[in-house]
Image (cartoon, rainbow, N blue to C red; front, side, top):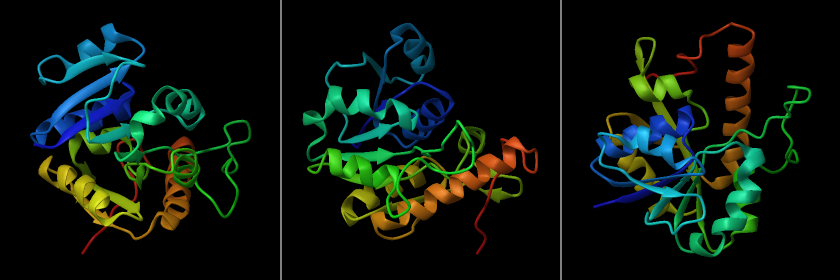
Length: 207
């Protein structure tokens, strides 16, 4: 059985926890607010841990804002070695909302890979809003999770639990593609903020 630890209990963390539980995985929810985490996990069978307590998942989803990554990596850096680490962040410059805060030739995922070189970093979920993950659809199209990474087995593990959880997932290539995925995520956010699309919609794939 796949085991998945999800750090963060916001809307994205909750939606991903739902997908992970639906996939049949052994799920752990990790948060600073344990009482809120217990509410999120109620009825799903997920275990709950306080931030800083040991991770049980082979796959670790960092469902926190980019600005919170430093604290998470400081708490769990050594524990992430060898694990599949899923970065869902969009490193948006919220002071201007006019760009990303990472260098133009880099990405949030690359920053994590540099900080924790023994981790198997995968970029995923950042091009989908929480509502689209929870419902499994964007309008008339199914929700598709785009995945990037340098470790094929790590990508396959993420794609596998997403598909087992009832959504579509596609491999977009190496971790270098995280930069483009973060650009797509940022574009969707700007479209939603300016009410060009809803927070339950987004860019969908069709075949």
